[in-house]
Length: 256
Image 1 (cartoon, rainbow, N blue to C red):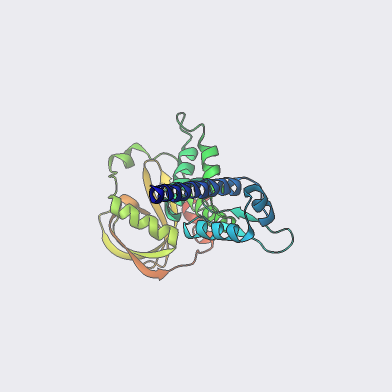
Image 2 (tube, rainbow, N blue to C red):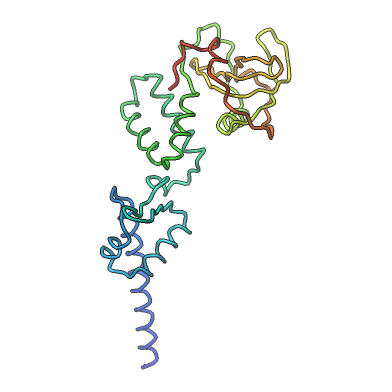
């Protein structure tokens, strides 16, 4: 009986200790989520733990994927940055970027329904990025443009592009990668081209790629639904000056 009581006591203490650590971990995450930039002394005081325990907890959170930032020196602090507002969602950087762009497109279309909160939602998602990534997201937003709705003659000939091609175009557009495409022109001419996807244009419901075309060595517009095949190359490209594309979209299509 004595051995059983001792074993029960050990199990109870272990369970209590585990629950205490879980509670402390959740409390630490809650503190780091707040707008306050905490010092290690402040966190120790709030949690009632030693510096060694705090460092161990912070290291465990980093290992678990929490984007914890810390600044040394006077005025420095500890905070939870990055995607702290959506860390429970399994979204990677590109998925969050695409979500922000999709919300921006919806807002630009000025739909009378289901758009009242879009600006606030978009801003909250945007703030979920670390500051050094916000500039990159803003750069992408400046490369997506919304024009007028497509005319009825264009819509009758429109076919929704395959999801696989849309995914490839999106990846190349975000990653600044050159694309090899097989394209069918309005006249029915089929060509293979290497293009740089600089801008995306929506004339609802038709999407276009505004690109630098290496076949013509000039800027061109390609309807996405006329791209029969697309393949990402291993070649990066640098954004060209906007003046290289002004004749294609300016000033009719402002960025989102």
